[in-house]
Image: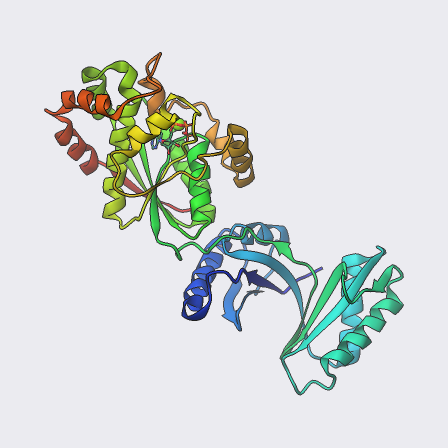
Amino acid sequence: MTFQTFLLKYGEIGIKGKNRYLFEDALVRQIKYSLKGVEGKFNVYKSQARIYVDCLSEYDYEDVVEHLKRVFGLVGICPVVRLEDEGFDRLKEEVVAYMKEMYGEKDFTFKIEARRAKKSYPKNSMEINCDLGEAVLENLKGSSVDVHKPEVLVNVEVRNEIYIYSQIIPGPGGMPVGTNGGAMLLLSGGIDSPVAGYMISKRGVKLHATYFHAPPYTSERAKQKVVDLAKIVARYSGPIELNVVNFTDIQLYIYDKCPHDELTIIMRRYMMKIAEHFALESGCLGLITGESIGQVASQTMQSLAATNEVCTLPVYRPVIGFDKQEIVDIAEKIDTYETSILPFEDCCTIFVAKHPVTKPSVKRIKKSEENLQDKIEELMKEAIESTEKITVRAF
Ligand code: ATP
Ligand code: MG
């Protein structure tokens, strides 16, 4: 079956009144972005509280649907057969042909729902419903009408052209990216942080990201892995500004001056501070991490409190209550999992203590950080100034 148009439905929440156009414009922008990843020419536009994608050239159906399913804010994707108006008899034939191809020999109940935007059409909606319904009943043996709870609702919209659709492929839901400010994701090469970024982006938040590496202790390939992960997340979120911070000197300095069982927590606190610096610089309203309570020593309630203590912006931790397997399930769904499990070291695994503190007290950590007084400000400044900025796009 060839579909000439996709009718896209969005959720109604949060788009009442005068903000509706912002929501719709963001949606159109994200749809255009997502379709850059597909071969073919498309025209994306809004009209009467709906969004349409007209297909202007040959295209791969599965591929288009796959890409539209990544656009947050869409709740339904309806492939439409679009016809010229060549009289009612011709329409009847087309609807029967459509139903045969879509539902063939199956047993199913249906209802025709006609809408007549073009008031000059010779039949009214009721007449269209009855006459088309009768034609389908006559031609498809397995069909029967159920006007209350049909299995197949066949929409026939009469405008300048005629639109026929009956399938609604579920969209991802959420809000279009760009309708809810920006946030800074602390993106590591692991499983959790890409998922965390995806989840916040789903609520319409534009993503920025910061990655800390420690060359030569971490390799170029470990960094490439993070760029690749950002690229996958960017399929959903749109382009991501990624800051790659050289953290080596700070890590070595902490290693040199602080108790080793506190290394991870202290490091994490400096990561948060630097990420917050970039967040404020680019107007972000929050930080995002992939932390989950109790997953490792640095994510106990005490450790989270100690890390959190250095931040002034809110820290969003969307996977905080998830078990590892639940996070893995999402990572698989969004396609980051295979990349996340590639075996390149990340900067934390090199400097971890055998027995890290699991219940750090903020007071003690602050005391240890006093050992860093001499050089830490200068090292932070250097790390910030030497940060590499990469714009990561999916397409
Ligand atoms: P992930 O799977 O996201 O790497 P993890 O289970 O390995 O998480 P940790 O290493 O304790 O957990 O990291 C907790 C969070 O801190 C990460 O989810 C991420 O947001 C942030 N983080 C850790 N290491 C880095 C890094 N090198 N660069 C940027 N952020 C990091
Ligand atoms: Mg990690």
